[in-house]
Length: 92
Image 1 (tube, rainbow, N blue to C red):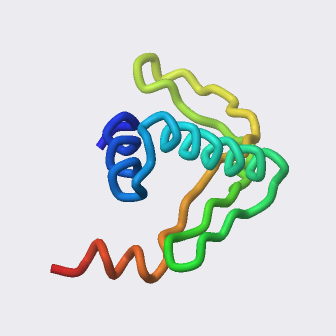
Image 2: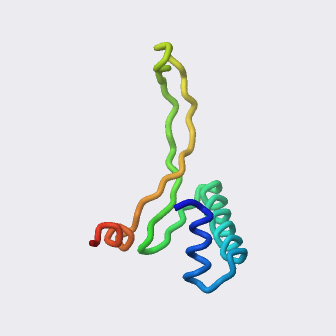
């Protein structure tokens, strides 16, 4: 499912216009991104949690040349699925 299909599905399920659904989805994603940028965790009970993980600096290898390269420390967004989401995915 791509973003356009998600907008259509949300609009149909919630009885919204596609424009309203698109604005709601964009706003939701923006708020989550801003919270993660601040270092906050976003918990949606039953669905899952969005959080930021710290990756330490280290050494990597360029697979093409074999050359060693230093990789800077960075933050990475992560998602942990909640119990309800896991059970929905695993139900048959």
